[in-house]
Image 1 (tube, rainbow, N blue to C red):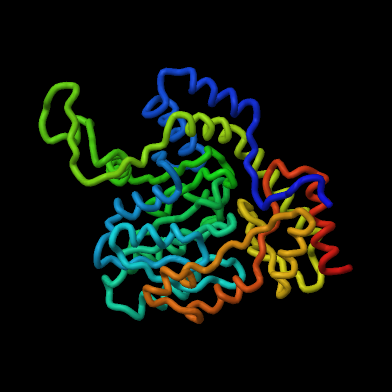
Image 2: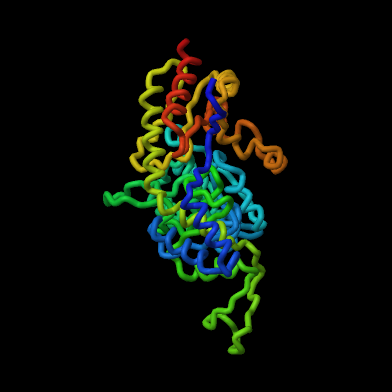
Length: 386
């Protein structure tokens, strides 16, 4: 028995993190202060985008992005059924219609050929956009999706919650960071405790589009602006205008201080994730009845380490019995009761459903100790081999 429970994910809070938060608590600002802008600038530099907008959480990032990109009644948007429900819900929040396409069986990412077939089978103008998801930390080929989106006049919103620091190599041999805005109109990230950068809660939108950036800033704060270039009349210093219906989706100074501190070691923590994944891959290769995912990606960010087995329920119970707490990522969105009430049903996306029947997520986080890694490997192998 492991000396203590090993979850599938866990935040790591250092003394530097604590000091950063303490300094903010002792400062003049708890919200709308200098740490927000500092975090945005540092995150944009890390990802390689021109702009970054900090928001309350990843779901808020999706909602605001969908709004800013024009989703509304009559707008249809395509995404993956293999994702957290927020990737689809953001379209519904705006009054739009969400549709799905199945995944590629190797990468588990949205199948671009399935999307192409859907687009070609409908009149031009039927669809407004695509939301590909960097599932588990595997990078979507956004260059290919950009070309497809341009052919049909669609926006492209990248859900990069699993992939800060991840990348793919484009057709010119250049590394393209997930969410850098080179191909997508916007991308979103999450700072939930199990993610690469933990801020308690929080999210970020990245983009290279200045007009989209300004719109997102307004939507984040009630649709209000004090920008002299945007207000409709010159007035006193206190003057502001609500120009559209927005939300209070701001991120506070405390969370931004924690996010900034965590960002300073993001590359180091990403390296640790990759090394743990490499240990698992080496240990579990050729284990009977255990399937490893093979994305073939050098730039995988390894938010999650997923394996597949026909004995998933038995393995899940066995791991919990031995104080290891795995997770399942994800129950396909279209199988959720709410979405079935919208008309989706089992059998709609067979590749996603086949994956779901066998998937299980093993513990993977940077603070996973050597003895814990060895213990997870030992217990998993004992289930399949002993």
